Length: 110
Length: 114
Image (cartoon, rainbow over all chains, first blue to last red; front, side, top):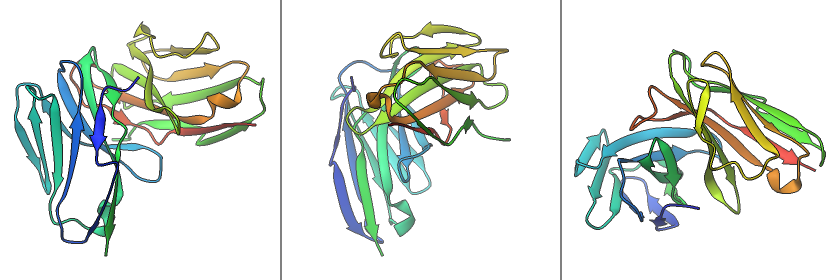
């Protein structure tokens, strides 16, 4: 079974706009990871945020974590057409096994 | 260095046949994971290896599924007597130690059971 939910399920924006995706989970975690998937194949790791961290940045990506609300958000700034993909959050809450959310399909229109 | 590789990239088989899927993790990674992605179930954990042992097999859906890892490196996921509901993309990942580490995924094997 899946750990949580992602919101929205689908998001369509214009190039240059920011995209925000949210993830909620149910149990306590060691860390939360965000992945991108193109065309239903391999997952590309984007960023890992630990349970004692509140915010992390990587290039145009900004991830926040609120353990009191059991939620995380991924912000992609100045989006590009190449950012079009599915984005998944995954929680690591026991021994490294990842529990994935349902994903958000992002479409960035040129 | 090289990433996680999986073979074959695509596999079409007939219902009832056995299939073997292979994963080559990143060199030096002690932890290896198998996941499955299907339309109805999303991304699901199957099994976790630390070295050659599997401390967590909780995600294997039935006794038709088994996996082994030899030499702390290559892993094989075997599905016996395949069923149509086994059709999915099977993804392998590896990480340095396992606990609280980034997992690096392979490109997956798309299995279609006719």
